Length: 468
Ligand SMILES: [Zn+2]
Image (cartoon, rainbow, N blue to C red; front, side, top):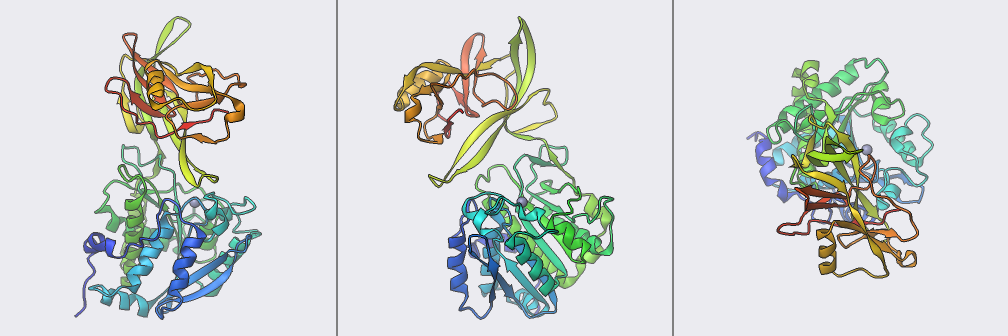
């Protein structure tokens, strides 16, 4: 009997297919190589080496199905955008599984040929950076195709001539889905192939399929799906492919509150692709139209990691009401193979129409820059000493420059080499270190963009930075 696919159910049982060896926060070439080597013996997959990166790391295409309709899917052409790579391996596990969805699998195998390139940019991925080895953004190399990775993608697209191409990325966490306080968890784009934002039948099909994916995904994350900005970029692959007759779809993994390591976003990628394949087989996306596509709200950059509202700052003897928006940049430290945060003040003034992932209304509170403790340290003070410093408004310590052999600080305090003449200030692009007072009593310190309450002291500061 023909079993109908209930995407609700797939959402619930997704954990069956989760590839536990991958962590979507960071995926390396060695990790996917281990999985691909294991899959080489499996009849289900046809695995082909399609080239090498500049550092001679192998790039593979994993194909399934024997159908007439070809689909190309690639991930991590930007090395620091690994969420979808993990989701692709969940999807490969889904195909390897036997359960109540066998009928759906059979349909896919008979009607489609899906070609997956997980990790197009292994050199960038291993360093967790966007570009490739020679710092070329592969998604700005679709015309010149100087980098081997761009050549590889172009060649495979010529070879399989896909009906649909899925280009999988991560976007920053500061987008909302429209002008509302809802983060953009998944955004999609049918890329424009010219500067007039024209629509031809090839792009129209991308729009229809996106509208169909949106309809399916919306039931899980209503209000959190957005349309990526449609500025034409002639050097990017999606735009180039649409101009060459391939209906391309950009999917960007965004952010949803409470999903710090993007486990939910990874799952949503999985569901998005499953629902796309289902819709392609049934051709039901053809019932959608441009209106459905354009009614998906556009990505707006309205979020900060931390938004402090209604503070009072003083200058020239006058008081002014300001909001302060702070972003915490997550940086991969190559030496320690660890992530850390470096926070800066991004915006000051009227941020009424913006939102904070973390927000505090500090109406009537006064704000000043964090202070620097005057003594020079060679080793770190104890946790208790740091707590005393926080209680007195110190957010940074001076350090003997010869002892600063680290790039970030695991302790909840910042470090400035003592030779550096550094004047903390509340200005845009400045390190986010603040003292916040109520009736002249210090209530909070903000250290490296993390708020630390001084009554009922609790250390919520994940790390400090070296100010340079
Ligand atoms: Zn990207």
